Image (cartoon, rainbow, N blue to C red; front, side, top):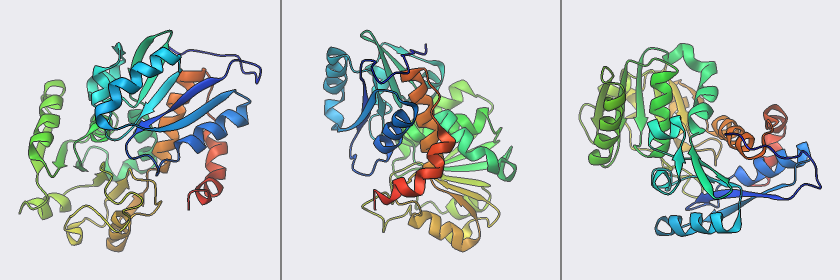
Length: 296
């Protein structure tokens, strides 16, 4: 359910924010606060660094204080499904929550990462539609990407590459129950089949924080020389805007995209849930270079 408010600066202040750990890398406060200012909405969005063992306490406090809602990011997306009262369809299917709406003490979990990824990847869909995909990571963001690739882009096979195979197996088990005809394969980073799997993939998506500020010298440990030059490579990391992962893919000749568009589109979904108003995405995109300068 979308909760609307008066589009007036005299309206009661709407408090929202981000629950994540770490949090210093995030552009979300700039995006949401800029959108609110542009639309004249009395909304403030704050970053909250919440350790994994404090998520329940943080959300309990949110209810007590009447805070309108939160975005939920690494490492809380899966855990958040257990601390809300209701899950909307995409949050239930993905088993992950990235947006919470507080409606008079009743918390509903949403997953706007799905639409965020789908809209960001859409311009490149002719490269990978109906083909094979490779996902790096097996957490909440990876789950949203898997769901989007299956439901929106009709991929036929998905490789899940993860340091911990048990976590990858759990993600595959979850989706095999939903899509029994879908072909999945889990691979460790040191698996001898990884080069061939990478070469056969038409889209490669990094769903881990590897390479995120301040650890910009890191990249997923892949045999990049095996990348298909015609593949599309998407890094959900958006700070820095060109990660080492993307640089390695560009060196092979791949088309690449960072996580900024996905960030904007998923933010727009959350913003509308909290305010009933459309986020001015195109206006924000025009000012992104200036916004990013604030984070350099």
